[in-house]
Image (cartoon, rainbow, N blue to C red; front, side, top):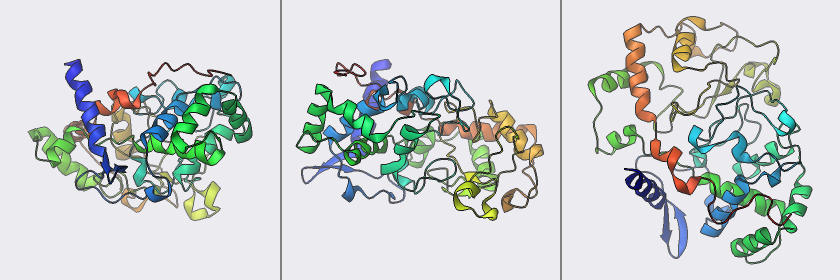
Length: 344
């Protein structure tokens, strides 16, 4: 069984990365929209993906070399962090938001809960330099990598010379993250006519289309917009969401709409991780919505579901869990004799 799952995972990656005219190409899953990311400006190569994977899992990116990207974005949690409501950085510093899950990033046009970053190639710079996360500078990271024989060799393989720059580092991280595509859940098999929903899942799918699809649109199960979903304001954080970036009052309390994929693995939920269970999320939409001036229009009247309807909706949401995504060895800790901080 385990061997069959590993083979299935590897085949999924092969399907998404194919060779065309001698160059590695990103294959769009059937029925999915065209990616937002411009691959022409960062052409894929296996060497750059391998380099990005090594960097993603290496705590050398942090000031004290204790915290890696994977510290807050672990594969078995759909590349988020279940141990803490809020992200934790070096020296156990506590952040202000829950670590977002990482998947299907090629279709994203903005990143972070407030959309503070508008391009994947610079997204990694935010946690590297954030004092509550890695608390490092890019020049320091480059100096550390330059002193590593392994990294100078990997940059040579990826770029044709051993020059290490911030742009190359960040683009390599992007290449690895771009491979994190989740499109092998039961839902996807049903869409490919390789499986069928149960009666309960079918009814839940109908409820999803009635109550959820306007924000969590198929097949990505997000529309990548920013919405106020009626959460009460935690006065200890006083997080105003998108407004802190746009300076527009109409963006107050708006946060990026997350995907509904892989919810089984990516708890806790919401931008501050306040809900541990999906039942709490559904109860919020049924009874807990706070009506403020910027509340999403779809939620003005609430979403009233009886217990049976909640059960059916949860049954459908279960079809969006992609086990191969969280167990795919291509996305996991590098196995090529990797030793963090080697050569430093």
